[in-house]
Image (cartoon, rainbow, N blue to C red; front, side):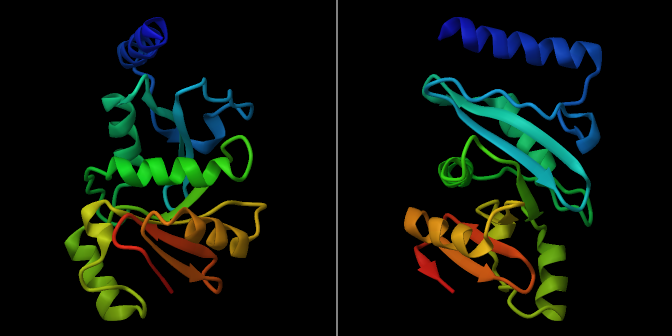
Length: 185
């Protein structure tokens, strides 16, 4: 396993030396994705607002991988003002568990990840269903869908995980998940 971690770290260094971005436009990602090795946690994410995508092994050998977390934080930034914040690693673990229920880690489409307080305040004033003190502002919430999968099934799987709050928004085509207290709407 130390060889794998060494490989992951050296790959990240090589990519940065070569100037290869870790988060790129969707068209430049190969369509065939390798499965996670035993003991790894992996996410494939697509930001519906920026067109960026990433495939990240964010946890291996019993620990989180800082470079992968940074890549995920960037992809899940507030797309309205490009503010980046730390995403709670437990939210990523929850997403990993849920996506695994749909096969070999399908690409999760992200509608909303981190929200800056300014963005959240504007949405709260102008949109129904946006909490004044949303967990999105703490990097503890995400709104997602999985293309080709039934949204109601995603909702049921998320509720069964009992990882926190789960909201169902069929008209907007997403499921809200957070790592706050367990509750459903």
